[in-house]
Length: 140
Image (cartoon, rainbow, N blue to C red; front, top):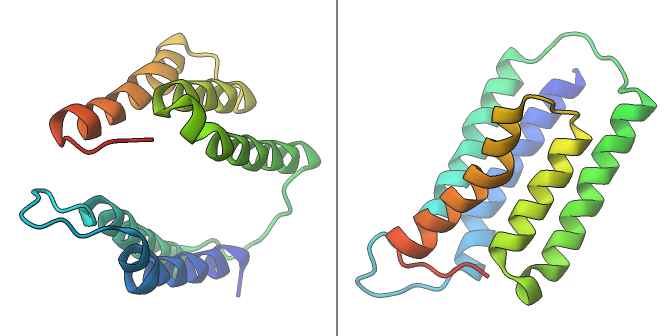
């Protein structure tokens, strides 16, 4: 069994955990709300399951260890995500999301200006517009 297939199985298990426990325990039910609050988390959980299954069945048959540089970038993204979660409530969604996307874009060494603009501005603002304005669901 290769690492790709193991990660696919872990993704399936995580999606199942979200559907069976994580979402019901942490998403408040609101009567007559459309779309209902658990809809987007459930879509994400089903994506974990579907994409994990795809990786499980179509995974690479060989394994190569990531370089020290790649592993360092991975640890950097984890650290930045943790910092973002810790400051999300204090600073709000938009500044944290834009700052996190700038940092991830720099870590991934993206140099195409259009993609940098889309990743750092359009994506966080689009998510904010979708949830806050269109769906009337508050973000932190």
